[in-house]
Length: 123
Image (cartoon, rainbow, N blue to C red; front, side, top):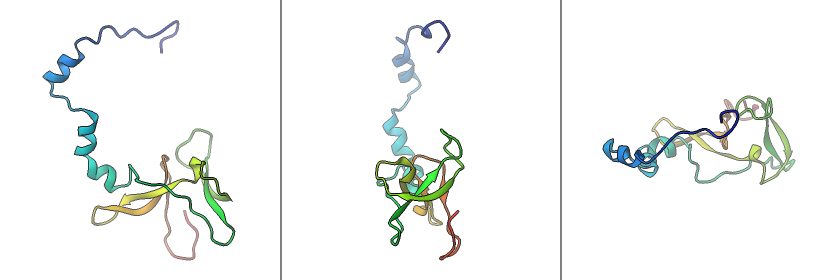
């Protein structure tokens, strides 16, 4: 917003006229049109889950590098908390045939898990 008060953008009376003239679609059309992109890569997950160690009963949690960052940081084990956004994961990434999911991603953050070999740490 501009200093000293609200930003003045003028009249929006002609927006509907231009929307019709340009044949603009609504957001629902956009989501349907690109459904394969969003659903096929896990961008709009149907569910989220915690990753809990069966022995310690601790959950994997992302520790942000800096407050507010959506990328970077590291993973640590901590007490499970279903309310913590930093413990919510979902399937992500299109697999070779184009369907979800070949990986695991931290929900609402640009952070993914990768396991290169069983019995070895995650990155």
